[in-house]
Image 1 (cartoon, protein in one colour):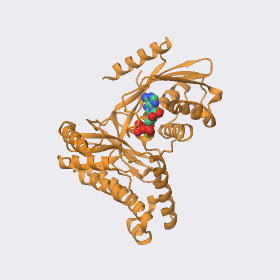
Image 2 (cartoon, helix red, strand yellow):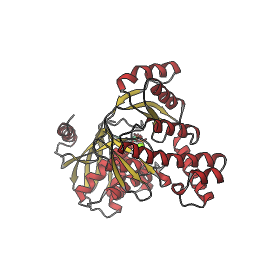
Image 3 (cartoon, protein in one colour):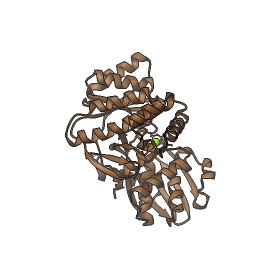
Image 4 (cartoon, helix red, strand yellow):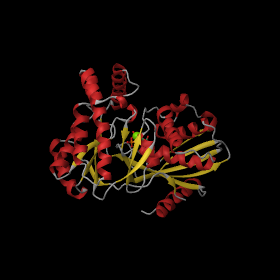
Length: 377
Ligand code: ADP
Ligand code: MG
């Protein structure tokens, strides 16, 4: 669908819900992280790209200091008076509505002057599958609010608004990767993010298929396991006397850590090195499949965030001709990315492998490196 068609559809939906026309329409994409996993909260590097699935919000001011949100995906609405927007009272709202309401709360806390708002949301990013529908939603609302309130926030501040909404208002701890990917990516490119400085550099992705295998798997205690990994990394940096694992060399890690901390820190050190290698190879137009596969092995064995479905997706993709494949996102379920082979070639073998293993049917589709969050109309 073209930008114009998506904007028209969102405007039509807004009109149906409110009987009015929106003031503007904004869009933010989902993302896939090509490489650089669990490095963001360690001050390291990641290389995500925006995908051709996005969340579109249609927004209009309302004078009564009420924020009302609709989700076409869920067929639900929620509302709150602006004066009631507070993390301590967020649990009174349905969990999905905490994301957009949290953005308004965060923006107000940073001095944005906002009246009430009507916000209708419609997304082609599958919800909760690991392609970051949450950041697509918070970032789309953040760029809308930025324009409406005239705050002129840049990429970093917008990312922080979106992160604060998710972490503090929706209560889901997260780094800044998803938000910066949605705000900083460009068509045909990945964006190299340095989480020490938050600086970003676009890296052209050559032609060639990028395939997502969405496993549909979701481990029950993923949030607890994520917090546990973060804590282990902090402890490892502490033992090494470093501010973060970004500063740790593989030699240091191997000489001075053992057991769990050794494995966790070794993943971070080697993953950061793989990201830098991947960037060099992309600039030199060299293949990078082996780096993706090595990343998966490290996430599986050292970081221990894979699961049988992800291992099967990666193994099947490699067997069917992918030049590289890895889990993408936090792990414990969600998606894998495979390169060098088309979704068409992978769909049947992956479906069969999943059926044989007794897993839920996966979905397999091509993604295109797409444009960052922006105003559509
Ligand atoms: P992911 O970001 O990988 O899709 P998350 O669990 O982080 O998975 O975020 C998914 C949640 O974000 C959904 O369960 C819902 O609460 C919220 N969300 C995202 N997009 C929408 C949408 N279009 N409508 C309503 N809620 C949404
Ligand atoms: Mg998310």
